[in-house]
Image 1 (spheres, rainbow, N blue to C red):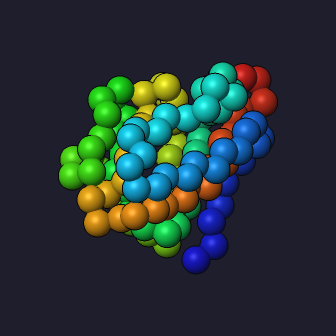
Image 2 (image 1 turned 180 degrees about the vertical axis):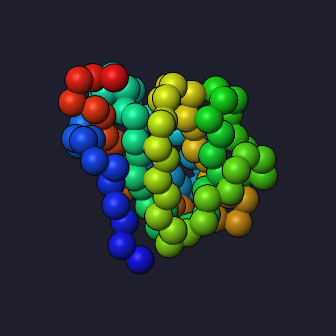
Image 3 (image 1 turned 120 degrees about the vertical axis):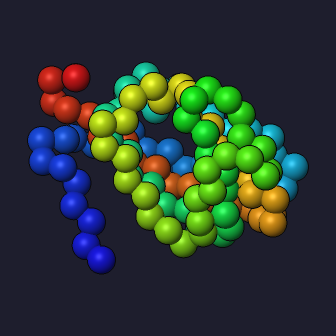
Length: 107
């Protein structure tokens, strides 16, 4: 399936998140947060993860499940410091590759 990035957005930052067994909760790095992205495009590989975007930590059994070998995109994204990831209880490792985009005028 072809993915289309909304027009007028420009790439701002990239992050690769590596989660392994025993890893607690992972948040976005300071570069990604400072960019204040408005659109995120990312993929999950290696295993399932849990996500929360309300500032609360996900656990290995709670949070929105995001499946292995799946691409995700979020338009009108905000509050990047509230986005948190954790491994799903049946997963021993996972990688999240995330590309962030902003509008040229910084909004």
